[in-house]
Length: 262
Image (cartoon, rainbow, N blue to C red):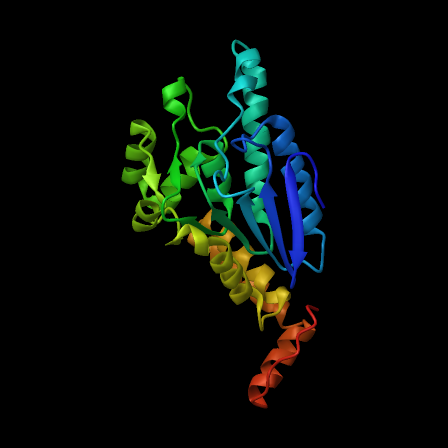
């Protein structure tokens, strides 16, 4: 599937979504809407068990929001609110997806581009990729969730430093502070992302994978007591699934489980 702003390919239960808005993969309102539609489609696709999000080609992941759209919106608070809301909704939907989503950061991920990457469950970056939130240089702040997710990933002090200085990091530096889980040479990026995606789903049941993601992501937003309550509920639900019965029986019988995602 190809549309004006994204490319979608599938193989081995893995979907690869490429942001496709050359030359810099800027996140215009139309691009955000197109990405939203693709992720909604993949959420409902039972054949897709994991998703990789990357940028088309080798040079850009996403260079941020389309600044040209800001010009006509300046002076209008409601337009600014709508832009932020659309970006946040896309990021929230990615983060809440009950399938692993891996950001393969192949080039600059700036502003909204980094905010979308932060919404993914796993981030792998090319060592020389550039990551940053430069919005303060425009007289703005990150508006797609960056002020909230960055501190949750790196800690409050580091998030304050990165946002207020607008400092840009290489993929390797981002790995060192926990902004990405892994940095690799650029030529190994996609193959490594695919290997990681397969490790998330291979030999596992999506009934448990989806509940693990829900428990981790939703629980992180809640108090410990509420998170534990959610974990108990999801753990108990799995006792009524065919895959839990198969998985436990296969373990007892010392054989490979044959899951049906049911």
